Length: 137
Image 1 (cartoon, rainbow, N blue to C red):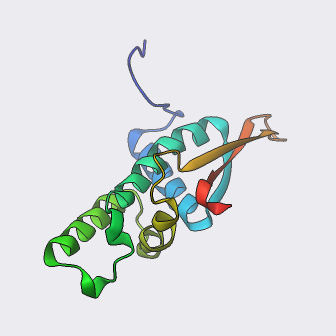
Image 2: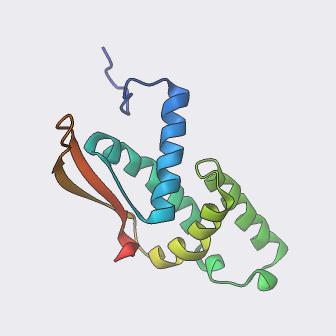
């Protein structure tokens, strides 16, 4: 019995599951919209929101030019980059998160992703969903 165990397993090992969600979060931030099964979409939301929150904790530092940041502020920025970098392995996508996505979501108290159910997949009738960033529209 799996009482009090959070998260879906998807029949994968923990390393495979972790890699899958890293790839999905990276793709979500890169394309700002991805299509997947409903179960994966619901689980992806947890990982994506945590990663986006790490970038939003910087507040006004996101809009401040690098040259104007103090040593302490630059340290906070680098720390946030490294923490988000645990989930997003691509440097370009990581910088896109901090440069483009986070400033659009600034001031929003959570709920950075939107889940849209789109029906069943033809091959196996798995329920499908679109996950997109709220800032996309």
